Image (cartoon, rainbow, N blue to C red):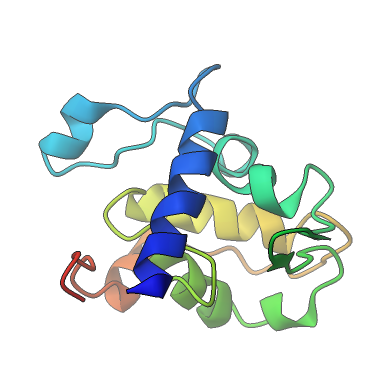
Length: 141
């Protein structure tokens, strides 16, 4: 229950950060089962969803929690690891399964793996995400 409360608080904070600009939470699309966040490119998804915690330069930080750095991160070498974390959450990071489309998840993972001093050139494709995505977590999970 504590993890759910923390995940909800982190997501609420990141959603409030992305309430301006081209990407924002859209209640109509999330109610219809589609992605809740509007963003086209991996950079846009990162800027409006991820950088509130991981920082604009991917350096992460320490405050109420330790936010891992994405810059120069060897854990990003295999695309499966960040895919799992984005879809299912880990520690204090909330899941984004059901909030981001397969294309958005693929784009943001490819963006992070090719920026911030990371040089993992193999792009992640929407089909890769669809194959790994399980059912969206619910409040009961």
